Amino acid sequence: MSRDKKLNEIIQYIDFLEEVFGDIAFTIDEKIEKRKEESKREDKAEKKFGEKKEKGEEKKKEEEGKREEEDKKKKSIFDSIVKECYSLPEPWVAIKEEKTHLLRDIADRIRACKRCPLWEKRKNAVPGDGNPSAEIVFVGEAPGYEEDKKGKPFVGKSGKLLETLIKEEIGLDRSSVFITNVVRCRPPENRMPEKKEIEACSPYLFEEINAIKPKIVVALGSPAAKVLIGRDEKISEMRGNFYKRPEFEVFVTFHPAYAIRNPSQIEVMREDFKKIKEFLRSE
Image 1 (cartoon, rainbow, N blue to C red):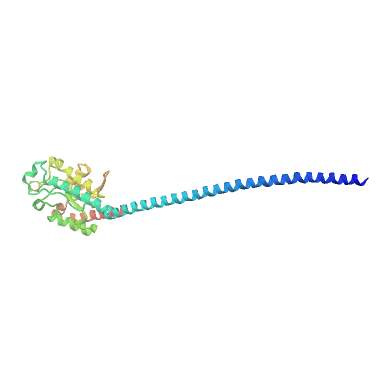
Image 2 (cartoon, one colour):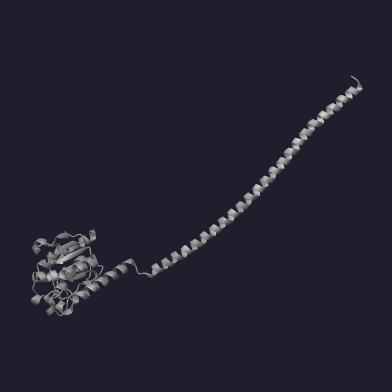
């Protein structure tokens, strides 16, 4: 092979290499440019994401600030309610005050009552007396001489015996219970109340009981027992027994005046009052 031919081949080979490397270089440049564009887009996207994230954090902080303000307002309202509640009386105090108000209203109406002829000769009508939140209500038949004079139930000899039995057998004093009668004006000569007198006056009794809401109502004697349990039976048959009413329990025993006239029955009444104590313990 001549020297010129060889040189020509070398030149062709170099041209080939330049062409190949030129394509490679072009491809590399193209890829570099493409990568730059991608990098710019990524930077732009990252910047946008960063701005969005920053805005999101600002919004989150703003929302947290709003929540804190709302919590402060709620706490302030709650504190105000609590403060207001502390200024209110205890629930049992409020209930007792309401019961006292109801019983006072009933007492005022009893003192002004003219439903039956008994009012014409009374000195005082006699409303119930005692604890508005009592667990026990004692019910007699009608006021006697002392009660008519003082306007308060069971303040004579019968009242003293009743108070003794309450204290010694139940462990309570008079101020812990409520004492009332079926009829509120004294019948002439302390006779038994008549049916019309009982019918006229007994609604007051049930109003008192409804206001107090006791656990047990103790009927002292036949008239009270008949009104409370609605049975026309002898006191000897009803005495010592419990009777269930929808609103309260009724227990029947003798009237203290009967026990004073028949001293042997005082021990019977003591046993009855022990039953009342047991009933209260079981509730």
